[in-house]
Image 1 (cartoon, rainbow, N blue to C red):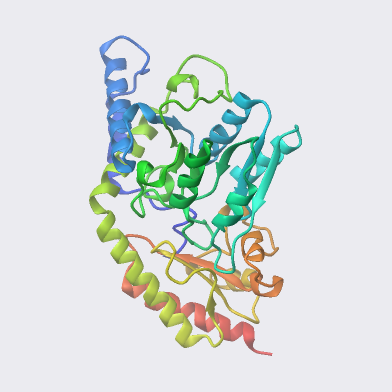
Image 2 (cartoon, rainbow, N blue to C red; image 1 turned 180 degrees about the vertical axis):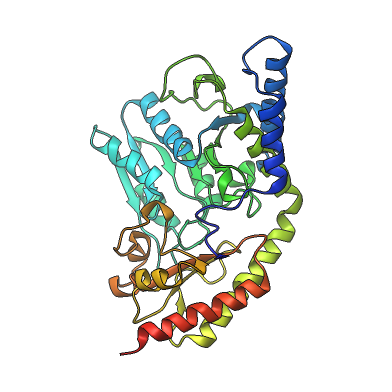
Length: 375
């Protein structure tokens, strides 16, 4: 199997697995316990908090551990809305469901939300964000990079705008942390979502950066774990894995970025040479180094993926919509026709993808496209 679906999830790095296993074997205590085994578990957690903070340029006390990207997004949006009780939220039309659905939920309960446009390249229009701001606006939430197209969003400009206007800004960085440099000060974010299974860590664990002074209400109620925002005994093995994945990302990011960019370019070039009419969806350069979303006119992406599923792992878009045979809402929001959206697939490389795999994937995909195109 040639794995080209790293935006859905990545394999766990062996060093991360070792870090998780070490905690499972030796630091199995409850980190709230006062005895030595509990203290060792707490020490593993706090080491990971330092590792996460170091990767994003934050202070350790600003890192809240969660169960992953979805919980982090919900905690940022719902936690702030519960604190405010009413008001207006600005987001974009291309957000992940873990942002869009909380906004829809809040709308049904009296909050107002504005969903700003993206241009044909899939980039959020900053001027539309500016125009959408009202005196009741308390939160702007826009993703750092789109999970389907890989297009990087103008987070730094939006963050500066939010700070200028005196409102909170949250960025879903599930697809960027660990892949490209992310610094919370440079981006002007008040909250930032991290999901470790997108950069070679375990599933079921993530974090939310919460700037000092930002107040949120908890979504769950129990004891006072994680500043009272995430009650329940902590997932110490997962947290250790998250920390190790962050540490390794900081060390190897430059090499990983260069490697995935080169192989993604090779993949695009090879497919374009073999498949007439192929074109890229989204901005050609302002995107994640590992992500390629392409339209192959005349074929149905579901048919193509079904034909290659035993040899090449790929997707038609977000893994959260797997099994849905309908056009991508993200691509449609970019002004792409329904037919072309239904003819698009997402390919995403990783640190362990090889040139040989890319060459083989080009041959397999091109062969199946030709078979589907035959009358």
